[in-house]
Image (tube, rainbow over all chains, first blue to last red; front, side):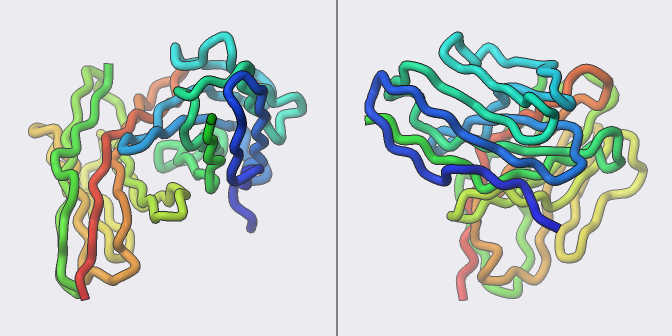
Length: 116
Length: 116
């Protein structure tokens, strides 16, 4: 039983470059979430997919951010024209559809982005 | 809007002792879920325990129990018989259980250090 996986685990980029992260959820989990976590803070919600449909987006998700889940399985998060303020841990989570225990979200190991 | 407050930035506990991590929340929704996650230095958020707002009994999972006091809007995590491996950041989170919104709102976390 594999958990949520994320790639890459670490990414260092220069300001102005584009970056893309990938998330593979737990198989058969319909829901997929992206969060951002900066130093000393708890994770903050970015966006949520049910299957391939992006149903909820935070105000944090500026125009430079885009997320996709084209076939309802893996998801990608792209940041265009990165800024130093984008440096953070990007966490992906998935949950089964309509299960008990509050539809618990299970997280991956995260991708740590450093923008120089 | 939902808000989670964790007032203890850091806590120390002797190995094999019990420790309580505080969490208070604010919401106007009658139906909500409360979660605790553990985040070791590796970065992955590990789900520990869940409590629904309508659950009559406090949740327990192994050495973890949730002291849920609805009237006081508190959901403290109790870890019994602390182990060295319990040293980590601990986050309290909540979400509205109605349809349409699945985002988790997190507190700022408490860093627990277990002393041998």
